[in-house]
Length: 168
Image (cartoon, rainbow, N blue to C red; front, top):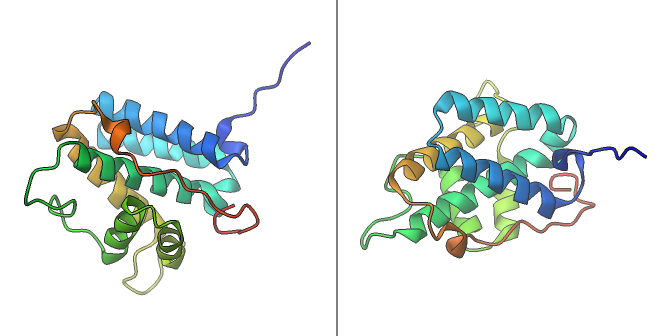
């Protein structure tokens, strides 16, 4: 009897998806992946996710990136520095990372949901830009920090109401 493989990104198990994304991010950091490698992997995640990308998987990716960013900073915190000292970011990204680091799930989801899904005529940040900003921050900080002890500093996973269309 043949067993059919169902990719974690098309399942509705948020913990499984976040574990998959955390593994992918950690591997990219461990090999000090280039920007093009990050882009390839994110595009693969988007493609495999299909309809679930906009509904939930982009949020789960962004949340996992923020968890890793927070943990990278916390694992080798230098007195007098701030997680936001490395490079300027949009205010919404600052708020999101802070909420994730504080395990403030409702604020993190509200901040993320308030970001425009696609680029508009205004100067507002689109969700893809939001994701790119998080990837750049993780990649930059990851090149200068050890991954040893990373898991000790990770904020908790995202737990949401599965009936919520933004984060189901």
